[in-house]
Image 1 (cartoon, rainbow, N blue to C red):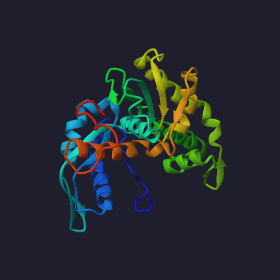
Image 2 (cartoon, helix red, strand yellow):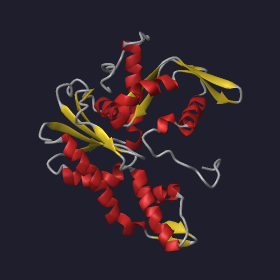
Image 3 (cartoon, helix red, strand yellow):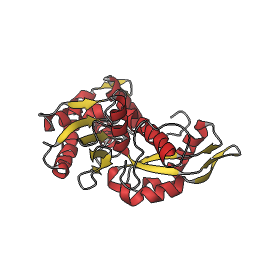
Image 4 (tube, helix red, strand yellow):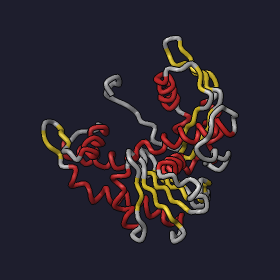
Length: 279
């Protein structure tokens, strides 16, 4: 935030992996890892575009990347996963349920920045026809509040980071030294959450076979109420630090994939992800 100028365009659309901004952020992350080479890099995609863009993203991230200051990082292989599948792996591993869940159905709900993703799986294998994502993420909520602030102050308000911080800390937003009460927008926030959940329910169908309803993602706290109302007969399961559930699962799945598929030394902690299954 401190390094940027006043205007920052965020790539909030389905083709974001094809933008220079995405590659710049990815290479910035590679530089921060402080390594010269990576044997296996695990990356994520929204469920709706996973099948179409998996091969393209893996090709994009494989090879030598210029990370600035005369440094490069070589990625020998990339593996793309459907984003909520990382959370499923993380949850099953945290609770030592990998083997117990092999014949059980799970629903992972992942409200992210751009998309509201959900994944239906049996064990660690994704059910593609019931899994999907819609453009109803945290960014929609932030923009809704920003538009309301803009109307109140009579000028465009674009500081979405401040709105996000206020929502997460349950603090008021300060605009021009005045306090803006975000709480008054909660009914409209709930409408967005309910819209996303309604689309999911239509795709998932009857949930009586679902043993695990797992809520993760950076927007979990904004969508929790709508999810609980939709699954009133289920216990909603959550994980610690839900914003990082996907990436923790990527690390576990990547380590196991390296051991079982790439032949790296060591013992996997659970079965490796199956290619093409989003696991």
